[in-house]
Amino acid sequence: MEKIDNLDKKILNILSKNARIPFKDVAAECGVSRAAIHQRVQHLIDGNVIMGSGFDVNPKSLGYSTCTYVGITLERGSMYKEVVERLRHIPEIVECHFTTGPYTMLVKLYARDNEQLMNLLNGQLQDIPGVVATETLISLEQSIKREIPVKTDEEAE
Image 1 (tube, helix red, strand yellow):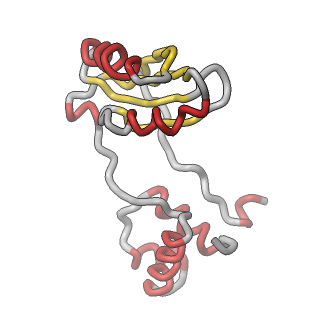
Image 2 (cartoon, one colour):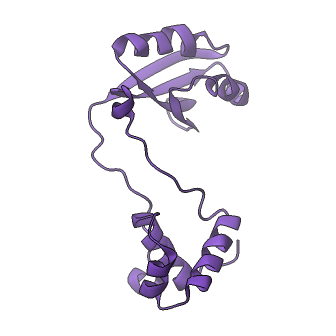
């Protein structure tokens, strides 16, 4: 990706606050044509600066009341890719990270209740070859969820 200029940053700032805003409104706020916004956004998508857009589904509305982070310790770090392939088949897992620190991996998952959580942990995660330990942290409340801030050069000063 080529350098991101101030117009790109302004567009990203607007879209990160409301991905559904019409391009004509973004164009008006940026003082350029709608075609310029469309071209810039496509360029940002092609350059993997924008990595998707969509809707955030509220897990609770689908009956998933328990948000959990699970630290996973592997027998060997080199087993990561094989374990990830197994984790991909567990639909309740929504994020997976290869980490430093006390865990080899950290996953975020949703469960309907403690019984399902126990089944996910004991009946699925801990049965994966190479998983030697798990530590479970239940999220009681999500207080902050936002995109990374995008500041123009003028705002950064």
